[in-house]
Image (tube, rainbow, N blue to C red; front, side, top):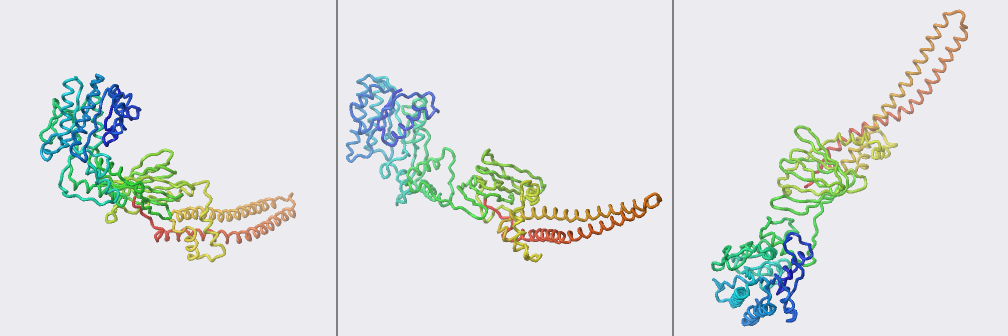
Length: 562
């Protein structure tokens, strides 16, 4: 099929041609019954020769060309009726019975306030010319009387909506004379879909009662029934909300098919390039950042959470608020615990396999960055916008034990943090004040670092106690050996054939050896015992001090506004 579009550079023509090309080039595959070979674009700068060529080969004609803002009212008739006559004559010349679609305005009804419209009379004349042509040639005629069109067009020309969009987007002044004035608007995308219906032979017919469209299967006119009746006040109020969206992050309600949804798309086409991007407020601390992206009235908010390596966030629960955590980069662990039953679940998550995890009301939850080098990036959605007056967020650790166990059971774990504490305590008196100072210096303000030190201190304390116990067991073993030698010697002394001097010598040797070993062991134990007892004492002091620090700022559980 070859398609001719007159007025191809106008608002409707531009949108229609762009979308016809999408079908021709198979970018749009929603209309498999439409097969397009060539698209002929005719406009004011086209030649008569081009019109002749197009009219000879066209299988379908979208006649969109017309005059709507002439300097002289006489131009209405010349531009609208005159060019239509020229187009039809050219088609007749080549005996081309292609289907013709005519774009006409609601002013052609000459009803109500349009009764004296010169523009309306010129378009009505063009309509009648088309109907007569169809009766004469047998060609299919489809005449559309469009209401006010809503699409990207030149501001301050013939579209109030375009003018308002341009003014608000560019911080230009505008005037609304009467906010209650109602417009019936047809969005350009809906118009294009209506033209596709026409190409497929599925157009809708209508008649008119004054300016009102009345659907009628046998009606002489065609229509696109998806229109919106809104006041000027409603239009500019929505536009002002759109303008504030980068500051408030709040999107007005925009249900599918709504006027607001279509208006926002149109508004964006008028944004100056410097407004294509806008900054977001990043809430940054030593754990990472939390950034809200967008708020909605009905569906809550969407945020981006970034956690540094080893950091835990969350540790809170909600009554009714629910969230979705979606890790898009990094490697993390999500844990949840039912605050009533104690039941726990956990999910290992990563950007390698993206999945969504619900944070269930009544379950305290946290997310841990398991990586030692990479940030954890999480998209968080929530069913309501965070309200500081009613946060519905209550701090409660999922578990401290699981963190301690993790470090204690990690075979690769090298007790880095606890060693740092011990290094700072070398040469100092064993007292709580020194322990607290060392802990604060090593952990900084990190609760997670304190928990790590706690796990390491517990593990180290257990090892040291074992070594001390081992020393006592060595002494016991030596004592048992000597006792057995003495008992054996006493038995042998009862037999005369045994040289008693030799036995006494052996016994004396064993006793002396025992005394020597005991002395050496005692000396070693004194030195090692002091060291080990100090080690155990340090670890105990560390554990006591950590428990106290965990209840103070800045080590209390921190709540995020996700």
